[in-house]
Amino acid sequence: MSAPIHIRIGDRAPIVTRSIGRSDGTSEALPSGTTVVLRVFDDEDAATDYTCTIVSATDGTVQYAWADDEPVSASREIDEPVQFSYVFVITFADGRVVTSPTIGRDILVIHPRLRA
Image 1 (cartoon, rainbow, N blue to C red):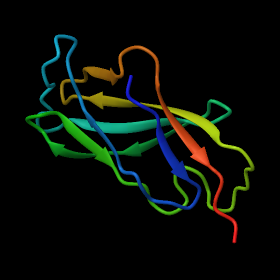
Image 2: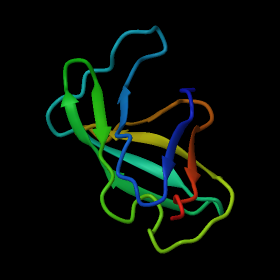
Image 3: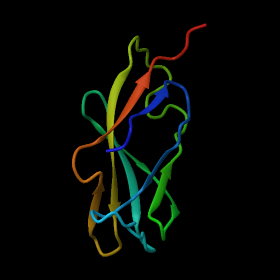
Image 4: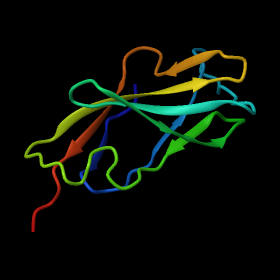
């Protein structure tokens, strides 16, 4: 698993990036027709999928840049950090599906907005 990603409500960075790797440590190529989603599980374990951009098909690198109100609505008020989790789900043109990480989920920590 990767180091946790930290983001504050209302922020659009950091961008989530992953190099999809095989169990032997080599890169998983992402040929034409491959789709990748970032599947985020909120603090109630409800999943939301976000379509990723393939940055390098050869190196298996994908990314997702947050849009407004992602991954948490800017109107949501929290007083303490909230832990979400995520995986990348890769679907190849032949129907094969690979999840990264293979075991468990990576962590996304949502922090309260700064108050004036």
